[in-house]
Amino acid sequence: MLNYGGEPVPGCPIVVQADEAGAAKAEGFGLSSAHVGIPARFQIYGPGLPGSPSVQVEGPESMAKCEIKRVTTNEQDSGHFQVSYIPTETGVFDVRVTWAGVDIPGSPFHPRIVDSSKLRVIGGWDAHCELNAVEDVNGMFI
Image (cartoon, rainbow, N blue to C red; front, side, top):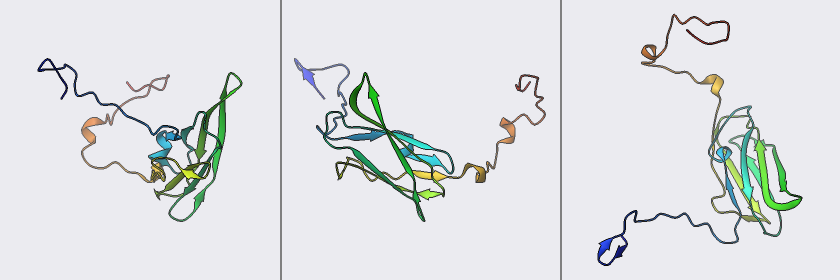
């Protein structure tokens, strides 16, 4: 707790996320979860850093093919990259992100991959579903 004149300062404690200076970082949903057969995406940022990123996505039984695209703004290199991969199996994957051959903070990431065509909702949802709903001409249920 921060005090000023013996009194607590309103709004304290202040929580700040500090990133390692001079280190690349990655963020996006593709680092935490994805669906089989649907592209998973995330971003890598390394403005001003020499080198470039490399990504390796390993599933329980196979490797997923990755695509890394450089994002440029105003004809300048911003150190921003978009990454996509398409998982072909379910399970916990290892997504290893390196910059100039060195793991970035948090790497390897471990997204959980599910097959939504095999998911089934059970138990207690009947009360929340309208079994006799009628679809109107605009595709809306009335």
